[in-house]
Image (cartoon, rainbow, N blue to C red; front, side, top):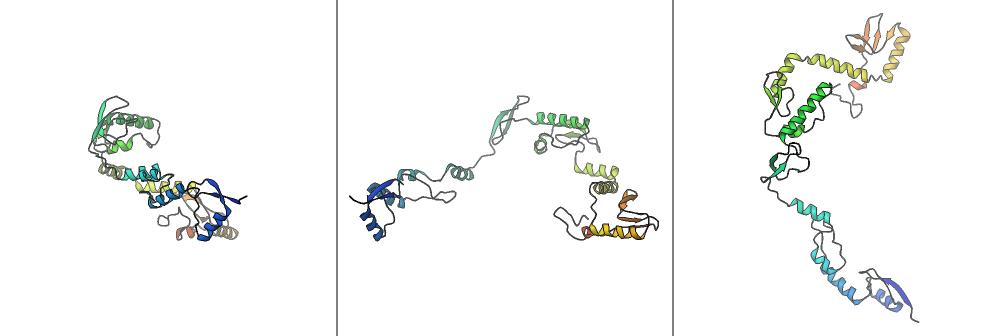
Length: 273
């Protein structure tokens, strides 16, 4: 009986058997590629000449038969879509008609406008004002208001039934209290005390977090051993406090720790300190 060896075709990956003597002869000649038939060997020669690479990612296009390789230009659908979308030119001057989901009126919009849940400017402003009135009645902050970006960008000035606090001018679209930044600055210069606001902000931040370093605590303990009636971090100066207070000597000490001259952590602002 002839000695047979089980091999795998380099092209179709099928298992086949060949005489051991032929396999040894091919190895001596340096033929590393083994094929199950003359058809696979011929197709391999054709495919070497027809190797293609993806136009988007540059990878070699996978194939099974030479006829598939002639038609393919991309390795997958994702590369084909990204390649075609980059070179697609849209004419943004074109328009289309869309019905408002609230009032069902016909609106002419740009060709790239999303059709789903479209709301016209007048309905968006009504919904915006209703939400503002609801939040003001509940004494809540005016955040996450609906369609605010759309109302700011729209070119149509639609009155919203409010007047400017400073100049009493009729407000439009997403304007809530002031008609311009000039009116806002004039109102703040007359009615807002920024020094008092700074003091309130400093006091509130002091109440939230009051970190004491080890050196400051050790210094307080030394003062407490020498002096009597020693206090620390008590608000005795119009809402402001001191790190160590010697009440009998009438001395207030502010401890200048590393927080004041060195960057401590990512969220620490040395310039603000």
